[in-house]
Length: 166
Image 1 (tube, rainbow, N blue to C red):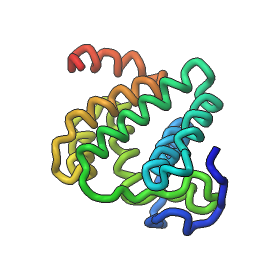
Image 2 (cartoon, helix red, strand yellow):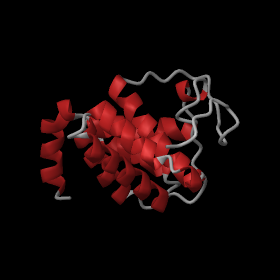
Image 3 (cartoon, helix red, strand yellow):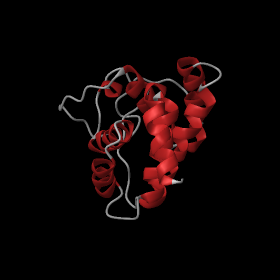
């Protein structure tokens, strides 16, 4: 597992005093995402193992692997569309992990919009986060993430998946 350090200078992070309330499930999704971001920033730390472990522990052993894969898929499709650095906070820092960067807020807004069936708003946020590049695959991956990670919304999202013929 990754070395657990609670230092704010472990990774480049852009702090924000702006409050952004996350639901319990959203906070879990963000933590998994941050572990993946940490892996891409410092591959030798292998924090993807923490992402998988955290998903299994917090989404249960049956659903956890699907959650981890859905989050990774969304992140990877965003990385393919986006050309510049994605600013994120350290998942394990007691101080930083309570704050969101501008990029993390954008990602969470897209997920929220997809969970709530607000496709136009999700597209607008994705346009900004993906820097005007083609974000269709990212939006499709985020819709799947929403269906997997937010099962209370699965019926509504299931209908959207059928209608969009992913």
